[in-house]
Length: 67
Image 1 (cartoon, rainbow, N blue to C red):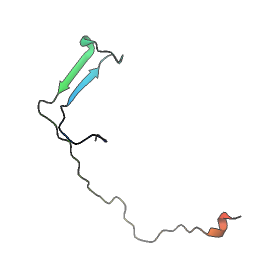
Image 2: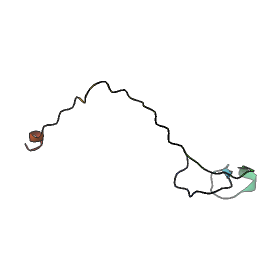
Image 3: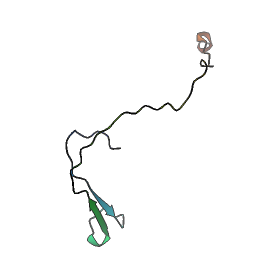
Image 4: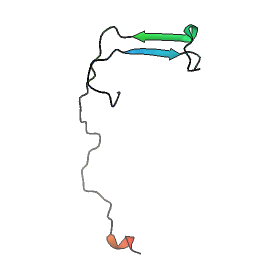
């Protein structure tokens, strides 16, 4: 997932730095692209991953912080 991008259409492409030198060397590069425009979207799906069957078992007494 990509966060913090403005709504709109995007061209998607990628570059691979084959020798990890952060320079554009054609012999060590692989690239790819999507030939259609990309319109990013997101959908919130809530899934419960914990089942609560009782009340919380931790008890905090206010007086215990004073001593």
